[in-house]
Length: 235
Image (tube, rainbow, N blue to C red; front, side, top):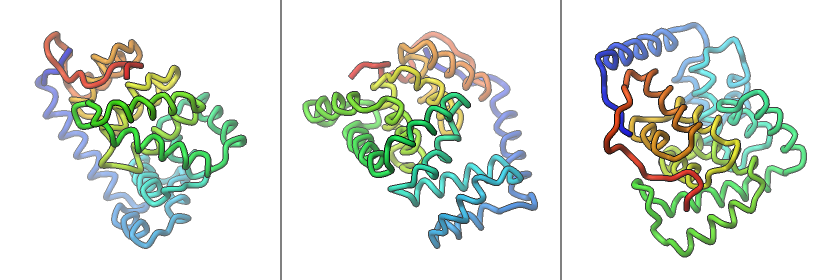
């Protein structure tokens, strides 16, 4: 399946731009303030803004992104804040319970496993070293699945240069119950190629999410060649 532009695409992009400008011109925290706090590593201030419901959703998201980039070993509370960007209420409560049993050090270990495995993928979804990747892939699947899902979400935000490869890895892992979070990640950070990967992944839930993303972005779904770099649950 592939996505094709329709007449609404330019209109939607313009509307998004206008909305972003409106948010930036508000009276709350500014993007420049967030950048300054990130540069000076003011984690507590970024965390405060991210939790402040009087701030716009855009500003809270920017604060969470800065927080994730700064905290290579985040506390469980900070990790939970980032995960809240993508989690359903049920998923969030499950994550809270899990974080009472797993330490931040254990999560940091899972983060390393996720990023090291994602680093073995190229932008086309191919493994650079299949033997090493197979061992790491099997090892990661032996870890608590919810913890891996939380880590995948964390690393999508914390590692901008690895975003595409981490999402391709998430599809390859095919963790049951992670689809809702992955669709939320698509809406937050996805592009046309990634939406096509969801459509062609073999997961019905990701396909549905890809279609919703396409409709929101002004694309129509048609048959034909499209990005197909990763299969659900397929190494």
